[in-house]
Image 1 (tube, rainbow, N blue to C red):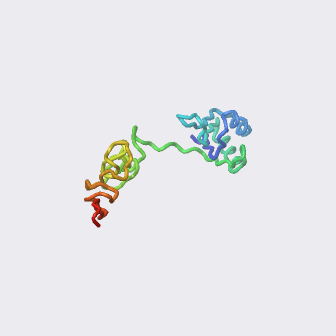
Image 2: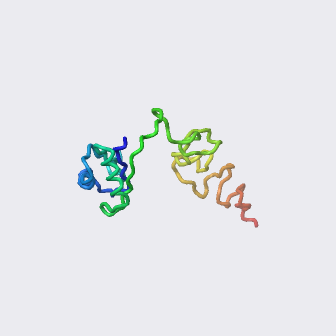
Image 3: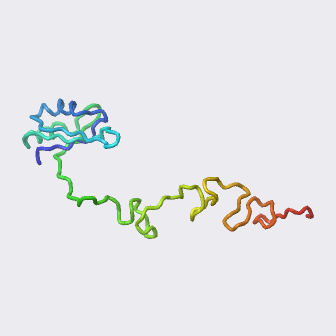
Length: 160
């Protein structure tokens, strides 16, 4: 495993052929893996270069660390093995994917309902329609203040 290098801070346009040409001057290369996003297939900014011998890999690491490659300074290290994780283990905390507090109970809940209303976070309670001025408020009163029984204190009679 000492013959595999981690090459970081790669330019987004770096391809396997570019790395082959650049690192090939230090020895015979067995494999080059430019890591890509699985959905967009865009380079993720790092790669692994495997040489035939550890001496070649060490020479390449010493001579390329911090050197300019396609406009960016390279970060080159001897690759370490990936940590052993059980299959399917998630990288989130015990409180769910957002790392929420103890009141969430470890389950994911969206911040607001998708139907646009009701629930504990407010809304009009009338589906997707936004709350209007004269809709009923949370206590059942009509909003706006121009009707009898509203919280505005005004009455609709004309006898002031």
